[in-house]
Length: 242
Image (tube, rainbow, N blue to C red):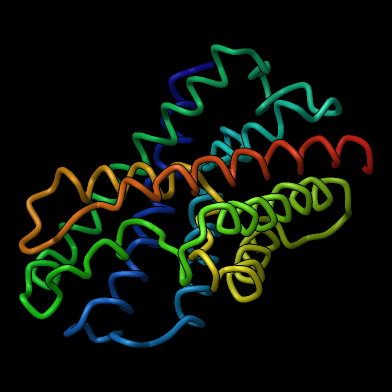
């Protein structure tokens, strides 16, 4: 795996989290020009964030998500993560590393872009939603189920798009993410990407944000386990179906 592929994956994930986390900040934080714009803005914002990230990370295959990497790994029809990148334990771990670093740096970028709003006393204790997901109703088992479904749809449909002639390119994946957000996102905030949640949650823990409150590590395993399981199931079924 070349350094070009590694940095493409890292930068693509950085763009994804900078823009996706940015729309969360713009909508969730009081005092921004987009404050309270609503769920529709978040869903489309994340979709367009994926669109941009995929273009940036083209040479790496633009996984941007360890659940996608896992789905490719278990898909018997897939022999390479990207042109010239064999599927091995070493390359899998390098993808994970690139994704985690990119996601963490993207979250730091959101902090820098919205620092004054994050430190504003009127947002004290409510900043975690800019960085990490959380459920509308906390029920760990059912929250995992929701994340499994969302990520299964992501990985399974991406595999189908790869087998279907179309000229949409990354726009197809962007629209898929919008659809998942609008349909399945309301229960858990649709992480559908383990590092989209874990790395920014760690950034929230480490960054000097005034009045930030806790990072809710008790919930953090849900957006790790659910997307991982969903990605594996989506990849495995795709191998059988397409």
